[in-house]
Length: 283
Image 1: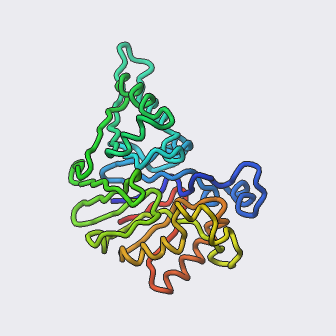
Image 2: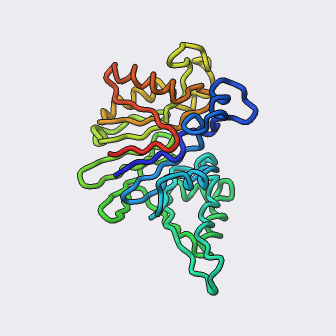
Image 3: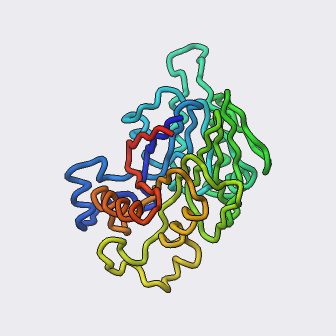
């Protein structure tokens, strides 16, 4: 398996419009990898897409992706779903009658429920399904999906409207959690994965400079995992490699910063790397 990070940012992409901080100025000047789009991951081999932020069209166009066998959605938040119009690419505009492509969309149980009540998501996807450009597959909790020789198991996190995914192929195990690690204690059976892909979490202090970014008692930490909590989760998972993404613009970390931070963490025994848009990683 190869993992491609289509988008490494979060709800607030980099550069943020109008912002003149050093991270945004550098991102405008240099583009990728200093710019970050919303969160999206592609797994080559089974050819699976995870989440579709607003920028997914341009992300796919610059990527190594040539075929999408299916797409899993982790939860309903707009930074993970607002690019759903990408599936209109499956229309055959020339043929009479049209011969549309049809992509399997996999919605874990709670995600499907939330799609029915949030942001018009269900209406949008059933519109696409009625036109045979997507096939909606609702997965009950505990249900697996097998695509070729790859087994995908969605499971709920502590914030139980959000799912992570265990991907198993040929003895390799990859864990992808797209967002929302708050309150999660990893179960023992997930220890020792070949790769875990996790959201970075929010730092209260800049990890390199010590500058206060958020007060430690900021209300956001009542429902969002901190960077410190994410590091504890990595220690509990004890993976061979860990890749952190969902890096928010307010965290003020560009790829030069994250390389330096990764070196510090690796020196402390944590096998952590930080994602950037277009990163390709062989499992």
